[in-house]
Each structure stands twice: as structure tokens, then as C-alpha cells.
Length: 282
Image 1 (cartoon, one colour):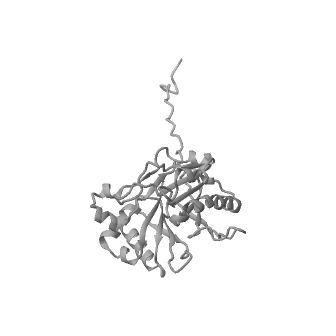
Image 2 (cartoon, rainbow, N blue to C red):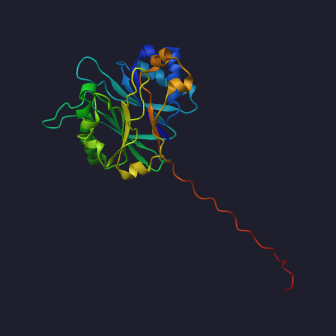
Image 3 (tube, rainbow, N blue to C red):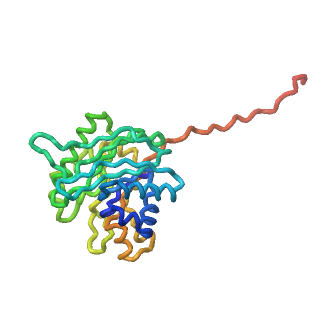
């Protein structure tokens, strides 16, 4: 089961109505059992409803949607939106992080919209996803604050199978190696699955690793297919020009695969020896 996060860059009706862009977005999204979309700008939700309609029309699997309120400090607002296959996972609960800790209020530009999925076919049957899209200049502080979000979620739901994913802006001048050492989720028991060598940007002007996937604890780490975390380079996959790639987004999706449960072992029937006739003599 694959899970992904994708900053689609100002995703609204203009892009969803563009046949070239929406076709490629749907080709990308339909690879995943759960895909988190970032930077959604859709005040009346019409664009996301149209995207869901197009996705379900094109895909063999039916997708449901969960979305946050419009989040942001000023007139510019974004939403976190999840699309998920309803035959694979079930949305069990949702939680809009309130970001109101005494003395540390409003730490996030866009507070995480946290979801709890039931995933009966994976080894992590209960899965919590915490999304993030940091304000670049505040990346260090916001990434550090994710420690408090994880603490709040564990207290609220009692679940340790947690994945933090999204656009962390966790590279370059926004999060240097020196700054990273001060961030609480950069230490055990957190594990960063997308390392600094991965280019998650579609722009050829840089090769930064802004987008990340981080898991909490050894049990969640053990539920991940080894070496499955990566960026999906849609420009290379679809053989796109630089211009066409940037029409889709300036970010690549980041993805990871969860281990599925092993099915029951098939036992071979025991071979029977030659049968004696009922009336035969020894």
C-alpha cells in the first residue's frame, strides 16, 4: 500500500480544469492508496469535487476525500486534502490541531489536519498521518513543533503508528545542517525516510529536499517496505519538457510503501499411500 504527499502548487479550478494538467495529476494520484495534497486553494471546494470526479472516472478504484478547513494567518488560505481508496482504507477519525499551547500559540502557518485511517491489509492496521506545509522562513520552528503535535495525537488516540509528511521546506537556507541538530523530530525515535540527497523539486534551478516523510518509532519503521521512500520524478516518467513539468507543479510527490499482511500459508495435502482393498488379505 503506497502513501504519498504532493505539493501541487496553487491547486484550484484553473489547474483542475486544464485537461493536460489534470490528466497528469490523475495519473500520479491513482498510483497511491492514500495521497495527501498540499497547497490547495479552493474556497468553495468546487475544484476538489471536480478533481475527485475526474479521478474516479479515470481510475479503476474509487477514491473518497477528506479535507481541512481553509488555513492561514491572513487572506491567503490553503487546505490539506486527502484522497484515499475506499476499498483499502477507512477514515476512522480526524483532528484539526488547535495550535494553542500556552506561551507558544500560532506556531504553524497552517496547522496540521491529522487523520486516523484503518488499514486492514497492512501490518500497521491503525495509521495516523500528520501533514505539514511550513512557511519557509519559519521552517525550523514549525518542524520542531511537530514534536508537540505527535505528543498530542498519541495522548488523544493512543496510536504510535504515525507518519509525518508534506512540504517541510527542510533544506537549503530554510533548514541547514546546523539548524537541523536543534529540531526535536530529527532525533530518535523519529526516522527521516527521505534523506538530503533526494531532489524533490521539479525546478532545474535547485535540487533541494524540501518534501519529506518522517515516521515515529521502531514499530512504524518496521511496517515500511525498506528503501521504498522516494520522490516520484514525473518529468522523467512522462518525458515532459521543463515548461510542461512546471505546469503540473514545482514539487515532486514523495511516497512510501507499507508492508501488507502475509496471507495464510497454503499447506500441501498429504500424499496418501496406496489403499488396500477392503477384502484384501495381509
